[in-house]
Image 1 (cartoon, rainbow over the protein chains, first blue to last red):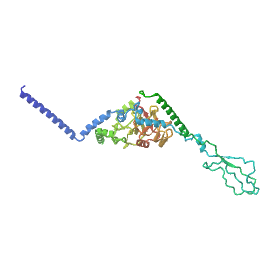
Image 2: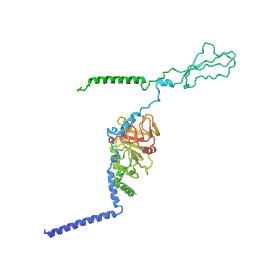
Image 3: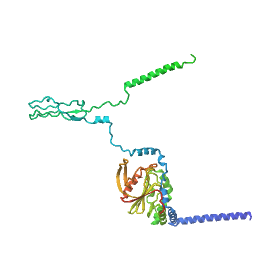
Image 4: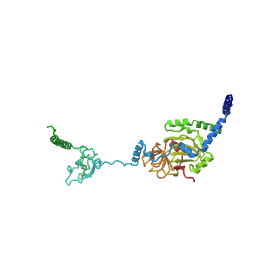
Length: 216
Length: 201
């Protein structure tokens, strides 16, 4: 085969290739130009793809994945959630104050007292208004509610002066009103500070004795 | 007609990558990609699904949700779905809930379920009660749109669906999804809770 033959053969091959490309292009144009042809091809592919996809695969495609074993303990906000979860089951009842304060909060109890054996102070035969002895040992501020029996004189009995109403007084329970101080007393403070001072002074004296400079 | 519908399906399929990117960037919300796009199962798919235990009854179509849902995401499309019996399929393993009406899937969402120490029971449960504004007395917490499943308190209710979150045994779903589900579900509807595909029967 001479050089010219080779060149001719190359030319022929090139022409063939060019022809092939042209035919392919023409075919594709023809395919696209046929209305519905491209669609049907795509539909075929589409149906085929979805036809082989199982329902499990469809679900797996949209799933965020499986929850791993330690996943619940990984997040920072998880700690807050865990706190919240721990706190949730604790449903607390109504608040009950401590006993000392509870005693303070209870209203004074009205105790009917037996009238004294002596005659009433202002019992007159003329039938004056029966007197009521004012509450003995009542609350100075009166902040614990009204006394159980008001001292308003009744508007004059009908002459039966012998009757005296039972004397009712309010009795407040004797409660130690001095709760424990949250801070120490000034005396305690003074004592403690004095103790520290004494300790410091003692240490200073001792160190003065012990650590004398060497060149002295 | 069918060809036109398929052409629309093709169009959606072709722009799927863009949908992926958009889905990855948007905040957790309703998934729009599925609207008007559902996949009808052929006989082979249905047989395979039933044989493998993925489904236990005939299903005609599934919502096409080609992107992985994130926590708090849901998809809902009941347009054109005729009335029918409703049933729910909950898969704890894939953390998904699917709502079916008349054999067509009309909604799906990511769920949170019971923690390891407080597992969600599996099996079939009828919806015992619907409680719209329920407040749990046990946990002193609001549980809107509750669908009660068992007598001892396991229910499907709205919850904050977050990665790494878990419940005390209930199924937690996003609030807007819960609202739609509450409207679609009825007392007596069947709920199937599975953990992965069941063994073939």
